[in-house]
Every structure is written in structure tokens, then in C-alpha cells.
Length: 226
Image 1 (cartoon, rainbow, N blue to C red):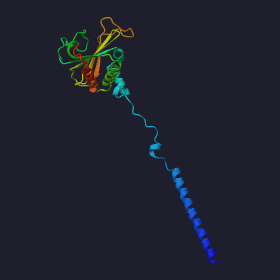
Image 2 (image 1 turned 60 degrees about the vertical axis):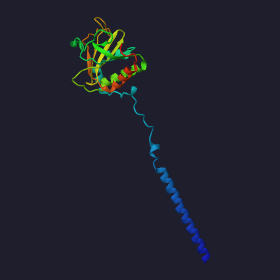
Image 3 (image 1 turned 90 degrees about the vertical axis):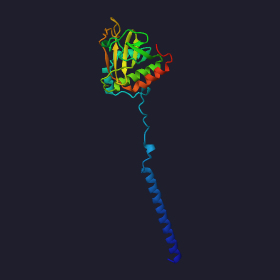
Image 4 (image 1 turned 135 degrees about the vertical axis):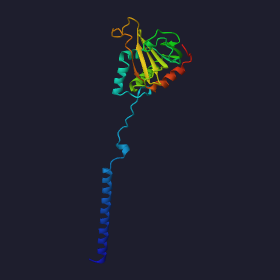
């Protein structure tokens, strides 16, 4: 074999070796691309939207719902929820009630008064969406609250009437508790035909979370006292 043949053989060998190295590189690169997991943004499934709550109030837990039933029985809540309008009151003259022994009962409806308290501001909530918001806020404040404080100097009130049935709530945001009463007269019955006695009073802790909504409702009412 002469020198030219040897050179040609070496050139051919180098070319084949280089081609083999290139083939291995491409093959490894392709394998890496196939086995490499996709980016995180491709692996992740659709992002779960956060749980929304009605009118901005967080949803009540199972324990909260149990507490809601204990403090604000469903029969009384039905009157609030089904009322065509809800009256919201604010009063300043605490401790002016003539009969403090009736502090948790209902008084006859009087102009410019709520259960014996002189009313400083009053608003009637007739708009259906605002009523739903108010009911949701009251439900949340009752269900989510702790036990409240021992004091009770209410400054706000709620009145709801549905089919002749009336409930009223006395609310103290400072003490974080409320008292409620259903009294429908001497012979009025509930939805099931059972007579509801004035002794069926209710109440308990009440979160101040709904207080800004009360203020918004009262501030929007330009007519003032009623």
C-alpha cells in the first residue's frame, strides 16, 4: 500500500469517526429533550379559582353553621330572609327603656323609637340585592363570632316582618353580642301552625364584621329619622 492509499484511508477513518460522534451527540440531545419534564407552567393543570363568598363575607364552616342555628333559630331566620323589607336602626340613648325587665322582648312599634330606644337614624332596606347582602352579613356575624362580652349596651337594631310575623334584633357591636325576640301578638302562629311565645328569645355572640354595611345603609338614607 503506497502513501496515497494510507492517507486516503486515514481521511476516511477520521470522517467516519467524526460522523459517529455527531450522530451520538444528536441522539443524546434528542433523548434528553424527550425525557426532560415540561416546564412547570405546562405541567400545572388549570389554576383553581379561590372560593368566592356571598357579598364578600367568608363562607361559614360546619361548626359556624351549627352555632348559627343555636343562636339564631331557622324559624326566626326565615322571617328575616323572606321579609320584603328590613328596617335598620341606630340609637344613642341607651338605658332609657321604661321597663328593663322587657329588655329582650318586643315593644309595640312606635314612631322614632325601637324597643323603647330613641332612634337617631333609620333606613328601610327594600332593594332585593341589598337585603340579601344584609342577611348574609347578619348570618356571618352570628355564626362566626365568639361568645361576646358580658356587657350589653346596644346601639343598633333590626326589624323584619313577614306574613304578620315579626322579629327584632338588638345589636351591640362594642360588646359583640345581640339579643333577638319573636313576638307576634297573643294568638299568632308560625309557618307550621305552632304558636310562638314571647319567651322564645334568642341571641349570642355577634361579630362586628357587618358594622360597615350597617353604616353604609344608614348613611345612604337621606331622610334621617323615621
